[in-house]
Length: 246
Image (cartoon, rainbow, N blue to C red; front, side, top):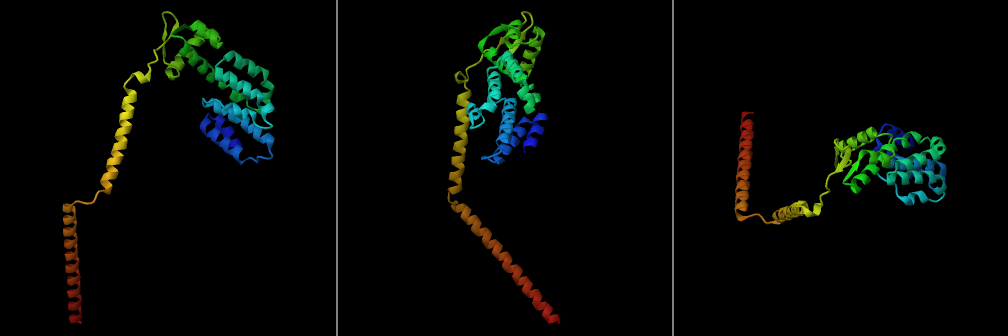
């Protein structure tokens, strides 16, 4: 399962990769195989971040693993805050560790996640900000690079904003408070209606049949019984005719 998870992670199938790594961790002997469990945990951290989730801090404090997982804790912090400069510093600081663990190829993919996180925070903090400032805050190479990152984030619906090409800035759209709209009331209405329909269906299922239904069922049974009797009588007469012929 461990190698299956690594292969799927390389193939960008992060969800299945994480599940395979989880199974490998569960099946590993808990009293022994510490080195194996540590390397599996390292890959789990990276794959989990590639899916967009942030690992729980408590998982870095597991017994006998805290020292080995320290570089990955710093890496997780840089991804969580969306600081690209900090991310680069951590990668350079622990490059030899990541190369030894063979996680470097996956860690380089986290760069886009760091940029997206930082861009979300900028979008939430500023109603309008120039692309030059975005370039500086995210630590990008140029304004053109910042423009491309913002345009891709808008297209992928990572942020709700537009690019003003006249002023070369990003303008965030107003975040509408959902609770000031009719959406919550409509959601409650749909849920209540669903529950009432279930209740009504249950009541109908427990209801005794009507008298008219009983009469119709009785008449149908009588008719069916009469047909069966006539069929039996016909078969009996045919048998008698055959006996007479012999």
